[in-house]
Length: 195
Image 1: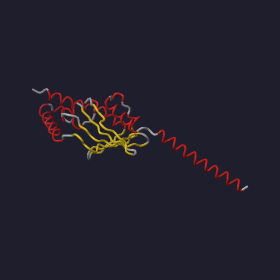
Image 2: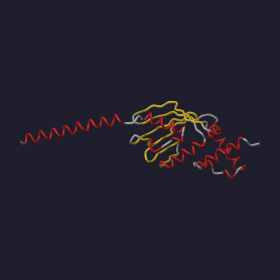
Image 3: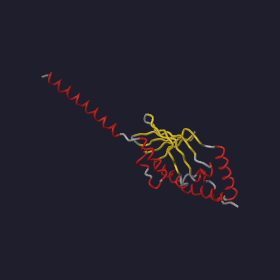
Image 4: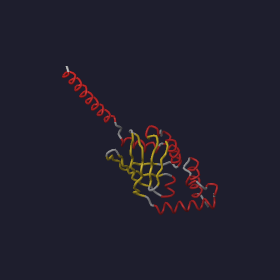
């Protein structure tokens, strides 16, 4: 009787182990395609009115660009997307690859602000990390094409001109809201059309 009892327990344990193993395989098959998720992210950046951050991101998003780090809630990131959309950006994926669970992307970005400040697209290398099949962090860790001296010179020239000629627009540089982006664009437009 004891022998039968042990055989039943062994059979149950083996069945449980096989069941867990098979479920693990099924879950790995269901894992999202991280490269496709990142491509979807950039597609939405080019068409921001269709962007639903809830489907792509975890509850918060950690970003890093150079020494600047920020953690956005989904609502805060949605506000940043609205700011970005005012400049009518065009993002292009130049290269994309996955290494383990990380996706690395070389991306080109041009918009009305970058055209004025930089004169050509800024190209960066970005690293995407994931949690629960959603994007949890985006790190810009290399500038492939960024002419910092030209960017800073044009930005300083614009800020000085606005301070002297349109002080009502001051503060646009650090206001990453739709209102701030609109002021930024107005400043560029007024500067380009000055007499």
